[in-house]
Length: 345
Length: 148
Image (cartoon, rainbow over all chains, first blue to last red; front, side, top):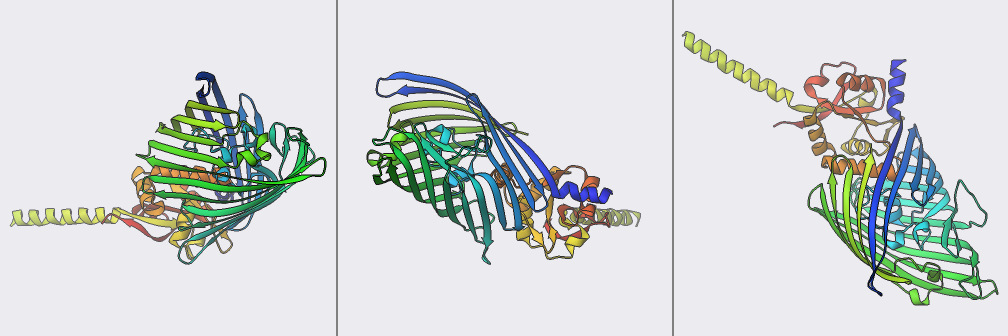
């Protein structure tokens, strides 16, 4: 009995992680040179993972002062050691940054996420969540390099006057059409963290009360193609993504328009030690003026220059100070933010 | 004559002590006897301790981190995963975050470690050679570090 129990202890495992953070920030409007607002926001992101033989489960629930959402809920099966098939609500794999990070803050070096990887309910202008099937596979070559492929298809987002709305497992609504993704990445060391990759995605979205457009929108098709690099060399870390998005917007009167825009960022980090990291990031978006789609995201950041420093202390705790100058279609401001983040246990 | 004998005895003791020290400073990879029969490459070992799934035949391999001795942990980080403790911690957390990968079990009691190695046909760990030879229920796979 003891033997069986011992084996079960090792192969079946459930872990719970609580990502805590508190952030205070102050905005200075660059147009009228006045303080635009201050904000303090706490958050708890609970991540529960479970592994039973070839099966795996993952749930992520976010609780903040203004939202509480089941962000991910996935059940997985590993037909072999290099393949996982998931069903549930996942972060869409065409966006590398969205699969690298999550809704907790501690494992993310910066305070602010790049605008092109921002979540739907934080002024994100590209779909980040979907509910359906996700398959990931890793292949290792004889030389030790690796190829990672992620393929996904599921119910995506709808667009309304307030931006994108992903399919919510706890509050399912109709109108969420299909979104599909493919990402291919090359890793020089299959077990390492450096990778370079490319992805494509497709989203069909129903538009609800999209009356900012004249005539109003009925639905749209959004396609993306992107490339990314995530590279570490000694104390340096480069993380960069460039994405091309093309949309076909259909209006209620039967007319349609075809528009595109580009977006990208480059983030460079320097780890002076395990405790101290300095970073800078530059973000840009091109094509705002010609994009009817982006008029639904007037608060999304189209340009940003960010610099910050992060200090790790005690066990899994960090303080981050970040300065930024940001521009959105609606605003132009500078910001100072300080954040405490931690992981328990 | 007595002085020469005493000197020889002291030299012999020093040599013996030095030889025991060398024998003690060896770290070995250990496994359940079922798993030890199979080929366990260094890539598999690294994979297992990075929290990635690994199978050999029908056996799912599980890494058990030996936390009974801080020096052993340092040697493990240096030779098996080639990372600092901080980087290793972040890497495991990132894997759990991205795909729900279970963290390798960490065990700080040697008897418990041996019990799990004996019970689980896929269990893999590391320990001082001097400790490994005391437990007939586990198998030494190979040497992963020696002091010289």
